[in-house]
Length: 326
Image 1: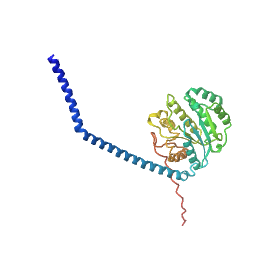
Image 2: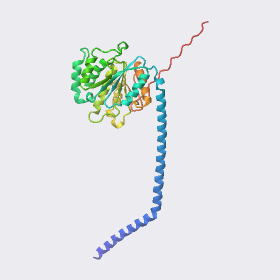
Image 3: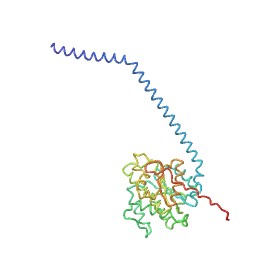
Image 4: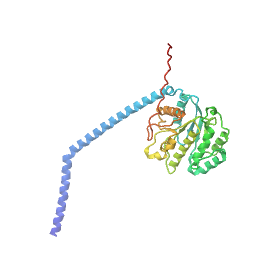
């Protein structure tokens, strides 16, 4: 009994000592702890205010730069695409505002917009590949032969491009005899819609990537399908540019621009611009189209896989001087 009481008293004494220590420690350290917390809070507030001010400066610089580029765009792109007809291709999820701004820059460069071809979600749906294959088999000319490795979207893009594009300036602005039937069938099938006069063939194409990369199980397939379209239109024209915005790294598998850059064969022929949501990016789209006319391609912007912000700008040809004869 004595041993039990002894141990009980000992345990109680220990807990009492701990409680007294905690109370005394808290009381003695109360002011220093409060002072430390206040200093830490003040430092964090000052740091936050500094970062906020830095961000305001960056935003101001960016707004000023955008305003300058927008004002100078007509001069920067003047005459770059004179005599060319450009088809705009909109993918599901692409930005109307980006498309309109890009269209304005292209027109300022002297080109004519032939019209718009808008791909629907049904066009990219992997479950609808049978519909694409059926239409292509029904409508393709007898002399149109596809590689054994061609996908449903490769085949559909080749057929649409043959109807809407040309690399012969003499055929620009004239319809292909089969264009009406092909477009009519694809529109009736709910695969595409059109605006303007895309049937009057264009020489260049600009394809607008989705604002956000596709997500889900079919994201990679859909992104690859868009790359197939860009590649198909490039092969039948003087060149194609795939334009959009930088994609977050976490969603790169559904990003068409990343998919195009990752394919070495495609990236050698199709140009990409990942700054189409910026005024500077619209100028780069024009420069990339001009580079395509010269038979070259490049990957431009600020995202992964970009080789630089813009293509090399051609230097002005020196004005010949007349020397007097002796």
